[in-house]
Length: 245
Image (spheres, rainbow, N blue to C red):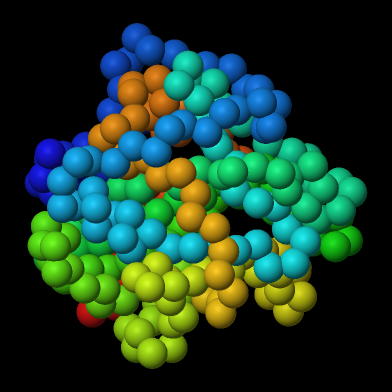
């Protein structure tokens, strides 16, 4: 499966028809720590290998949650966590999961990486159930074994920070180093995704076309409360906000 096939899934659709058979219902909301991560599943081609090659390393800086799986193979979805107790209370013991989708925006190619966290909470106990964070790695030739990174964008809630000067980004080999930061000065001290010099983890990666219909339906149709699933309906909106060229 090459890039043009990976991009074939619809992105901006009205209603909840999306990419799943409409007779398929979303599964159940289940405890956040009961969802087993999906096995790593990437296309067996150059694009899939580049997705893994450029997968960012994600490190939780301080006391926030770790990434957790959002859905399972039955279409059940995470119930998340209500903000209470410590910032990372009950959400710092998971191997995690990262969801990947190829994208083209204004002729430029990107890999979108999305991580789910059960809650986003500050030290005062304020915050919200559920969090999605997204990184966009812009690449020159996704179907080439010699592909190179052109820019990296990280989600700051409704905005993105994009760096085109790769000398300002720390890498572990070909993997950008990203941190899930706590900011006392920004957005009531909640967490956001930024750049770091600390080497974090590489979570089991699942590419969009490798998900079954139940998994895609759950990701698309679950009400994620104050945050939006980055690889879903508003994917082009996020690409526009991060666009560096």
